[in-house]
Image (cartoon, rainbow, N blue to C red; front, side):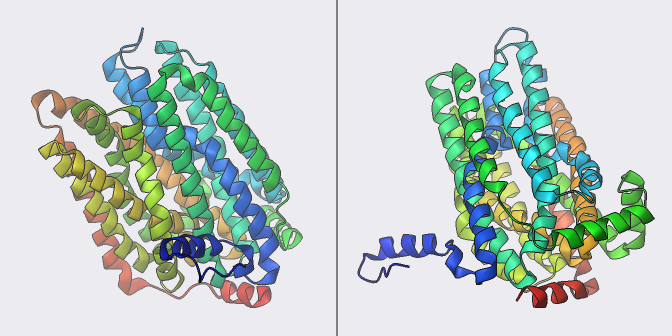
Length: 458
């Protein structure tokens, strides 16, 4: 790689940052797979950025406002749905985990990626009226459902392809690239919609094409020990009827520590998921911001901050158990919630921008914990099952939390107490973090199989 010593300091910093993503920074056996994933996760987020909650929530809230057949109360509910759709779709995670058992993982993920791209393109066909709003919400939900399968099964691919010692670092690099391109997609959508609210008819199919290109690259990813994994999963399926809601309950009964961790994740996550809709209402209804400014706060700034925070969180996560990680990381979400609440009370654009920065720091750690945290509890053959429990429970709170926030807002906003919704989010959020703190004495070492897989991959 090129020596940058003779270049100005800012250029050296940027160059060093860019070089850190080069496959040559990893052991030789990991480079080809990582390189293909890196490029594919640069193009796929351009498609995903069109339906990223913070982006599509602003688009729906503004583009359908005042349109024929669109009631303001139902528009607020549709906005809450758009922001919550990624989490609601997580309810299907156990289904994807069951369907993927014993099947080629990369091919399965590839077809789900293609489905997501086609559904994003289909949103372009929806008119700006009441029926179009409904159709947009349906297409969005289906696209996010397909993407839930990608997230659920991808964890097993990462576990088999990357040893524990490198996994958090690689996941961090891939998440960083994804966040940068999601931010770019958000900026493109914001600018295009400010120019003409009907531009989504052309923009969404274009972004979907980028996703299909990324999919072509991802299909070449090789899964290490694929046959061994398939045999282990098929043997497990013979002993069980497959993962299901009852299987989820059985898993939680068997693993008491994971069940307790999932309880506090539910409390913590409920506060987080309540925050998105009232934050969007503050941006649009109270501060009257444009598409670009709204998407900047809801998506672009948090995503742009993530690359700077992810390396710090990944180093911390590599040497800590997920319980300890969440007990520290969770306070960043609480801080962001406090900033949004203060912005609402003070009608302060500066504080809402500050909250976006804090959310970026929080999301940076959250994306690592989301993809890898369950592996501190799971054995290799049950990786997808543990991930499915995590993702499915997130889906349950993904339904309940936005509805609770919307209902509270509909009750309190007309009488001048809308900021109390944000206070409620903050209190619930803080309670969840304190729950993680209370669990720190229960931390157990990582499963022994991780050490074995690390040695085998070295």
